[in-house]
Image (cartoon, rainbow, N blue to C red; front, top):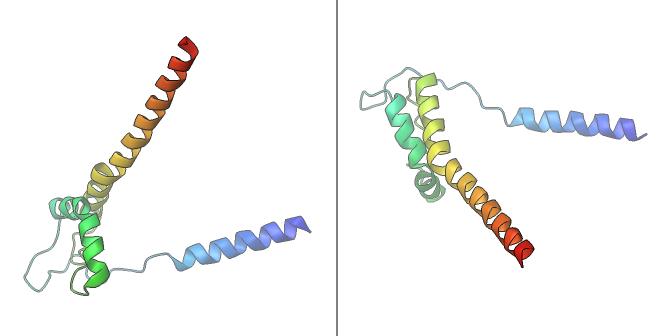
Length: 112
């Protein structure tokens, strides 16, 4: 009986995750109305300013977090690099700092 529940839960999880998969971007490699195609450097910049644009996009339909008129893989790489390097790294550094702090506290307790 438990096996059937596990199989059903796994199937449900797969269906839900498949529903989150992105579709094809029809505007890749096409110029925006001002004639530009976003490349690696613009993707990097958009990744860096991601928290700001996300917050603004909650209240405005004119601001998007991601440039749809992009060069494809290089823009995606720059966007991911900017988002992870500037925002993901901070959280990881904070977690490492907390671990070091806890370790030092434990060492001090052992010394006394």
